[in-house]
Image (cartoon, rainbow, N blue to C red; front, side, top):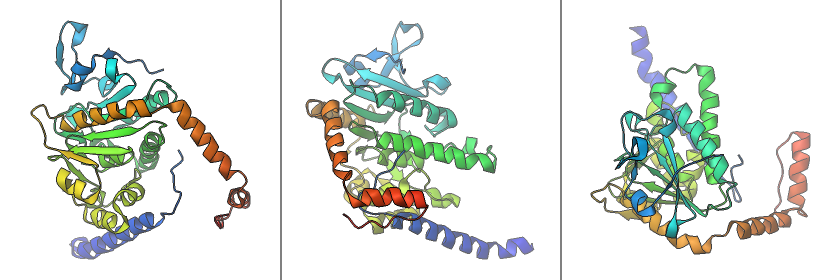
Length: 321
């Protein structure tokens, strides 16, 4: 009974501390920020893939690519589109039974796929989508998380963060097609993409504070950069969930579409954008531009200060010189 009597006060302390921690994470923003950080797949006719269909067992027929009994190796489907869509790669999350939540296996598959894509010179644009109706990604797999020891949670969250960073650092344009629920780590995954499009019926939010934790996959850093510091704090502190229209109004997404009967309006828009990007994107040219930009940092005093601070194990004092 004594413990029950003190619970409200303890909860208040926890909530206050949690809010300060999120604020501190958001506050560590500054100019020039950037996070550091063979895959064989079938090739699918673009018209067929645009409808979200995949080959059935044995290849005898085509069926809708949604299942409640998906093998672990099918939880992430990587498709290289052909014909007029050549150069577009689609990452399709397919964990219907777990609402596409981020499990150890799915994170491992994402890491493997991204590692292959970043060095593939034929890739021009990447779309991240769901193959499950009404769901983009519900965040971390909490059923798996609850079985972890405390010592396992930190490394696993670090791995999620690292994979999301890898997606953010891909050398080609990335588009998140949000046709359903994108909560917690699911929204953080979308935030790592260069462009986000969503159906009006989609739901998006960083809801971690409801679980007495904070966003751990880059949300405290990328959300303020997308919509501004003050509003990002408001959404994180409140764990508010936005629909597509509200997300568009605050600048969280670039395009909002009325959902269609097939449930893939955002994906279709993402595909249109990817097609528009194809003639403009050249990886080799982009890498050459990166090399030229990096070369400009070599003679700077700030670069030398950064190296000296690292050697002396202190905080660097940059002057913009």
